[in-house]
Image (cartoon, rainbow over all chains, first blue to last red; front, side, top):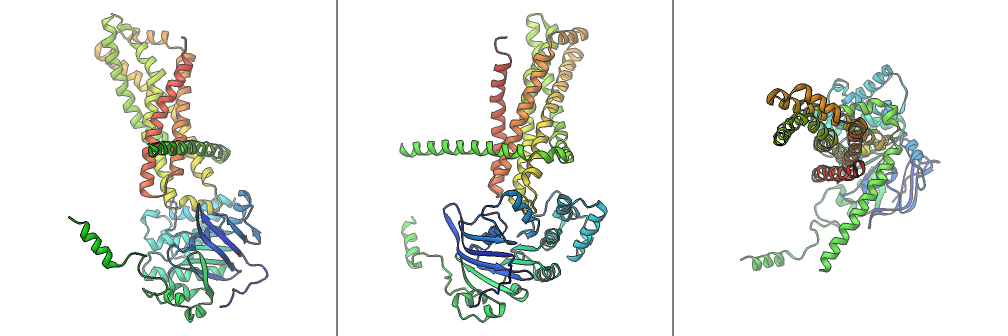
Length: 276
Length: 260
């Protein structure tokens, strides 16, 4: 197993991080880093803690233990103002887009520009149309979010999250619920945006095939721990039984198909006795 | 028995916790209220949604309440041969009590529930988190303008309610039943005191506006982000606001008119 090659200043760096909600510990002992220009996938089953990792990096959740550094700044005791300053350099794509339902496609993409810049309306218009053009939806500028398909909404949200040319882009399950064509379109857009902006990107997903074809580096998360990492080729050829099961989507393996339960015969028999 | 005590204790602790959280929420909102006034167009939009769109229900209800007051007032007064006092009865009932209270109850179910639903759904669909991630504070951008929109529209709606109500009472009393027009208005003008009746009514509706708007935005912001959670939050908004309005009305009335 290799470690992610670090440059002098990684954009995101987590060292020995524990995190959770309430009494539940979701992540433990996480070492994770992303450097400029890199597109990194975080993969794992549902409920493995992938999204929690994004919440840590974006400062929505504070670490219980260990250090989280973004753009070289520690998020440990950061004030709201400083956090907002960092977030202006980040973009985040949410699972279902999270478009503002009361604003048109155009106004959604214009939102961060209007909130954070004093650009004249004519320049905002040009910037928004360029961003929409990059995701192929310039023609949909006047539509409302309710008129968009799932894939289109995701692309609009993508345009909105990169409106301010962020240096760090986070994607939370960008492929969930998309048809194969939309999935390929979004995948290519993610790769292109990362390279065009020279940004660092974190892609949280459980879509193996599409992600392995576009990313530079992979972290595999299971039950709150990073259990494997490497380049897509290293992951594909990993001898680790769990990695193999996950990558090749096998039903049974180290991750059992059955939720822990007494033997089937016992359960059936019990029910037969209870029934009148 | 132990179970009962435990449940009771749990409910109390939960209640105190909620009140504390709502108070902190109120202060956070006041602290982030700058944009609601610096960019007043944000608040204007909410004034439209909470205020203007509530006009139909306010005007129709105001007219009917006024007309019922006309009928009931006349029926009672004529037993004592003092139907000339109809104008005073209608105006005082509306300005002091019915205008602020009924308008606030209607406002809670029409505008308060809509605000809760909107904020709750924005939360459930991650729009609030998305805004936060864009370094735009959702309390400043979404919550505070809706709060101030409600606070500002409430006294205006109550005033419109009372005005339409007086017209409704006049219609029944003077036009339909035939009370003398001049007596109706002069009695009203003589008995209504600007400070005592009009200002106190406005103060009431202003306080109700704060209460209803705070409950509405808080329930929306605090709801469990699921379909079920949002619907529960809407119910809570209507129930809590109505109870709060009636309780506050009693408290305010006892301070305003005590010993008079």
